[in-house]
Length: 495
Image 1: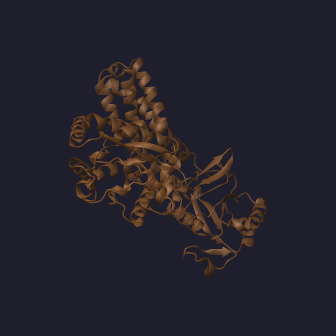
Image 2 (image 1 turned 135 degrees about the vertical axis):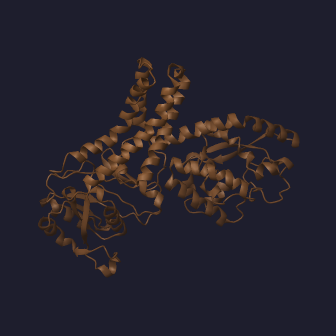
């Protein structure tokens, strides 16, 4: 009956219904727990998967200095320590995620995080001026060779670990009390990922299968009152309780009855009816909580996002400086008025920010009413027409990115007047302000550019903005940046 089982996390297990394939990577929170007597090889391999990136990043400098006949002196020792330390921050351990991830997903994730690590080290070297102390051949080889070895070794460890974890000796028998949308989804995922070592025997519910609408595979084994005896007689190791919150008394009674067993018990809240953003479980001072609407940029993810923004924005400003100067001169000579147009918009958490644009109109509207630009708008200057067509008027927002009031990719900020209008008309409109606004976004590359003449047009933007927040990843940002270039060429809606 689950002998030796001990949960290392609060007794809360959350698994929301997947809305898209991209969301699954953030849904895994179940720790891998081994039954007593399981081979020690699997736990050791899991530990190696956690430790390998930092160890490999640190030790690779030594053989490379020997390869190029370079002395492994004090500066290289410091660099090895820094590389290992930065790796622990940029490539945080998440063994469960690494084990259940697909091979391509695991490799892509490792390579992207490695690129962020290298950018951090290069930035530190540039600031401290210590980069001249190191052999370029050693550093370049380390940058290129280490991630290749890391991916190969991690994929090998993943394959071996999966084989050990799916062994019958490590499988734990589980039942689910309460047949809900969330519990059925949990059962599907556990069946799909046998490496978590859990086999669901079936469901218990007081309602009949005709009322529950359970899937064919969701076998009903009995009623709530049958659970204690079933657990004892069938040596059940894990029990997931998915009883609706309205039946708290019945849930408490059942938990008390299960006190005569050694099975691990988890509660599965049914939140499938909510439109959630970045759903995850956490705890506050020991109390388990379920995040239902949260920013994607919590923890290290915010650092990754900011590093990418600053790096790309700086490079873009340096490379585009001649173009920016030429546009500024053209705007100044084309019509009276300032070169830059500053407009109040809502930024992170709904706070007002000033967004910079090249002036493209003969007016600078920023009041209680702002009229959107329309096709053949007489307010648009001759040079402004071309700037708006190719979105070149947005380039000064690279300064906003460096200031930290905007990001390269995110929901587009709208004029304050428009925000106040649409927040009353569109459900969850303000949720898009849980992240920094962007120069470009998913909505823009999906065709939502130009005038929003109807409420439906703005609703479409909001749908894509929320989709972006649910599915954010560094790779998605890069895809949107590349897609933006093609969207600018193809569209004729920017006017």
